[in-house]
Length: 295
Image (tube, rainbow, N blue to C red):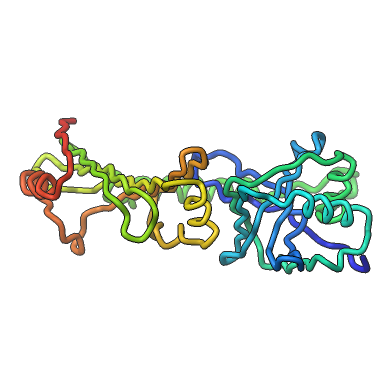
């Protein structure tokens, strides 16, 4: 191999991650095309798996600046092992075409496959493909001590002051709403586009004047089988079912479900019933099972 194949350390798009938790990073070793079937594949690992020789892989495609890696029911392990071995030993990989990852900034993982290889091979793959960060020494002053950054304390103070001003003067509407009662409604029906059932769990929150303030929605798509579930992600269909304003999504590869969580604040564009009794009757007439709750 004439040129060194460069991989990347990428942030994992984890929609289930709790607020404040540090994002997981993985080593994308290579994104490539296998000329025998023209399929696109990716191999990667995280740092904790290197000592155990665990290599993850799957079919792959690009969505925006993210690489989507999806597991397969019938993975071609021998092809992956062949590529990994040849790459680590600088052998001819002419039957594999390395893909450009210069614009890839994150990775999304959907039930990827894994194999065990020699830890020395995996370590070699990471060393060959993942660029190491450049460490620069901080300059010293004449007394031999490192120069202190006097701007850092000032920056911290400015951030604190800005956050305080925002908290007291620019609170959003939903932060100051006093919810007096709620209606919890749910229903289940068959999707018209997907091989899946759709389960809606919605909570309608009302103020003391029985006016609707906002709605918490959770829509779960329960797929018929693993093939339909994986195909949903393989084709990138999940993006069509997630609105721009959302509270997050939950993927469950064991039960083949995909849940979208949203919060809809009532404004001038909201066209459904906003009065308590009218809303309760409306959703019951639509076939929803509803429970009334006082706060």
